Length: 68
Length: 68
Image (cartoon, rainbow over all chains, first blue to last red; front, side):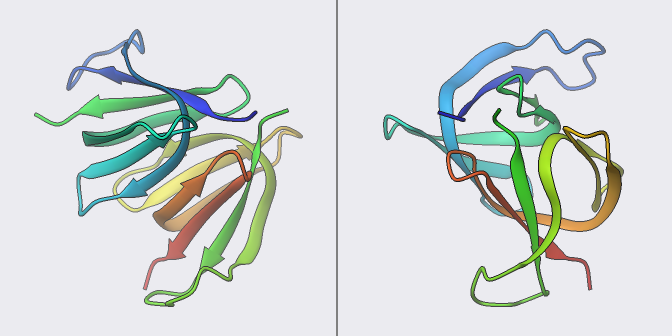
């Protein structure tokens, strides 16, 4: 399966060492300007307030920067 | 491998029937507010002006809406 894990870093944090927010994410949908509805392959759904900093799909790694 | 294909739809287009922009994308990095640098597993790199409409990673499908 080709889901990714979402990690969150703090606003302005220089490195990409993030906290795991949700594992095995299949679907990401924008919710307005600065939020995302993310759903895992297990059906778990969460709202994330922040913006995408980077996505590395082959590494299954998506990093968000939390909103201030 | 867990790369995705990027498709582009027109601004305001109701359905998600998009035109293929880049296949086998590994990395997506924001470039300012409304553009993305996307890189395939083959090293091909393109700049995309638009915003993400949806991502379905298990289906290897990322849809962008082109900027007006």
